[in-house]
Amino acid sequence: MPKVITLKRLYNGIASLRDYTVDKALRNNESIKVRCNGQEMCLSPSDLRKGERGSEKIVSKFDGTSYYLVDFKWKVNE
Image (cartoon, rainbow, N blue to C red):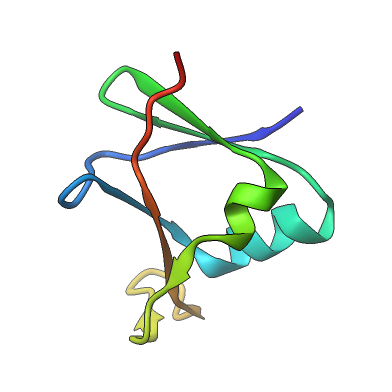
């Protein structure tokens, strides 16, 4: 069963996921289902490998963990 991630918004048609979420799905050979504005996109392990990792490390203001964003072009599943 794929992990479901809900995003509040897209940035210029790009869905950004945290790198540790993508890495965990790849290690377990799982898909990720992304939801945003009532639409869904499913990313298979092969799709997850094609994501573009950002160059800027981000530090969470809540728990201090650091991560990179991995960007995927938004494509709604029909």
